[in-house]
Amino acid sequence: IKEAHPESNKRVPAIVDALEKLELTPKHRGSQVLEIQNFYPASLDDVARVHSRTYITGLEKAMSKALDEGLIFIEGTGPTYATQTTFAESLLSAGAGITLVDSVVAASKLGLSPPLGFALIRPPGHHAVPEGPMGFCVFGNIAVAARYAQCQHGLKRVMIIDFDVHHGNGTCDAFYDDPDIFFLSTHQLGSYPGTGKMNLIGQGSGEGTTLNLPLPGGSGDYSMRCAFDEVIAPSAQRFKPDIILVSAGYDAHALDPLAGLQFTTGTFYMLASSIKQLARELCSGRCVFFLEGGYNLQSLSSSVADTFRAFLDEPSLAAQFDDPAMLYEEPTRRIKEAIEKVRHLHSL
Image 1 (tube, helix red, strand yellow):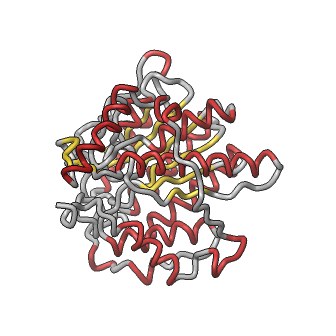
Image 2: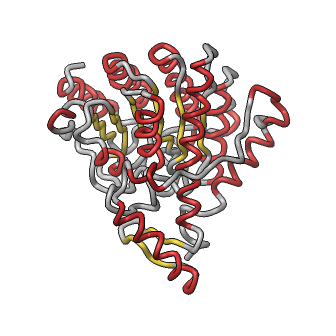
């Protein structure tokens, strides 16, 4: 099961190998690229700002069963499994995001242009709901970091941009009634987990701070450029965040086996570059990316590497990775209709 599961332990090493081959590591870049390896895991209190204590303690207790059995089943829709180290590793993943928030904030407090953070972590987090795991995800890494940024650093207004091919239902649930966290998700229409309908815009005092843009199957680079220019950027400019956090899923790539969008390596370069500029414009450059999905190792690693190149203001190498022959015509009419509808719904 472990070998066949798409959320495998080969994902992060494939990315690290690509970064090394393309000379995007500290060894090649010196102070341009800083790697933080020794950091603290998230505390139980950090995680409890998002998840229930019952879930946290229950998962911790389940590790003894995982020790006995080697692999245990903890949630059915993904499906999601755990080994004896899952609890500790999930705290470490959440801790990576917290550490990057600390680093970005520390630089901005010194009046420096803060570095862009990228949490190269697994398991991913955006499906994990407040009461439990879901869809390969154990703890909501980005949600934990958002609450931490508010509580520890006084960054009241947090914008979360989620461009994973699947709707970040866990993040959405955690902040659905919160006026100070704007959750914006682009995802494939009808994909797992079936949430993220356009008319779900938040509730109570949080009404208007959830924006869902389901993209029709076949949407690609054109669609995402339109979505950024006409939906993401104006939403951020109106919300005026103190920090931007990004659920960076790379499973919308045309080569990814778990979905049916047509993003390319170049699409992810465009997103990284555009979000970086948005953060500079709106929140003094404070921005952290969190790895979510992406299950074709080739497209995942090349797209993350091109994200790094965008961070460094270097040209994209997408032409070396992307084969235009794999693409087909995007459903532009349906895309324009979806964007027009969501703009009307949110008065953009």
